[in-house]
Length: 262
Figure 1 (cartoon, rainbow, N blue to C red):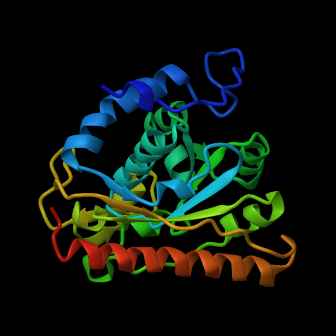
Figure 2 (cartoon, rainbow, N blue to C red; figure 1 turned 180 degrees about the horizontal axis):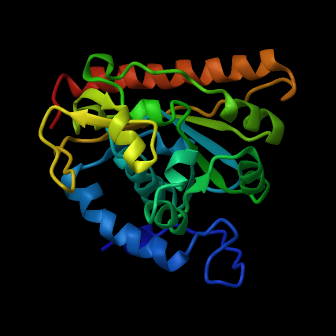
């Protein structure tokens, strides 16, 4: 039973049973109950450093992204709820929000289209964001580039500077092995309205099932960037700090798992 691990939610009902971003507390409870067996028994999530995630107030959790399907985001949300009793609000790529059915489902469980306006509103309300600066390219890295960060977008750094919100670097080790990717199909991507569709080593059934790899999540000490949010050099420096911190956490996780995926 999930029980006491259900996160507290800053819920402002817009009059439709969900908030202005589409979050439904009842849908979130159902999602957490459904994801609990994955978190506890399938991926057997172990985390280190969760005390660095504040229990209250605005903050931005920034993590690496991988694994073809966003199970890493799901497990991060579960872990923060378990360890800190808070509901992460993932900032989703615009392509995700445009997907039929999936886009609405993601909104109901707390995901928000990653615009600066939406992020600003959430931080001003004291909520905690989950940001993947690698975006969609992160989940479609080929196996030869696993655990090497791709292009690191600096939007999270600008938000942190503008709203004086701490950045919590996080690393997920394990997701790279759940769906080893060998090719990205732009043709299939056009069919589903995405930039591309990653193809794994194994044949993909109608409903892809990830390998039961063990997830290890590492949270680093908060980064409080300094400078002017309107100064590109300050934003770039803060983004660089975060990227280095996440890469260091990944390296630590790889060392500590000692080559075991399971």
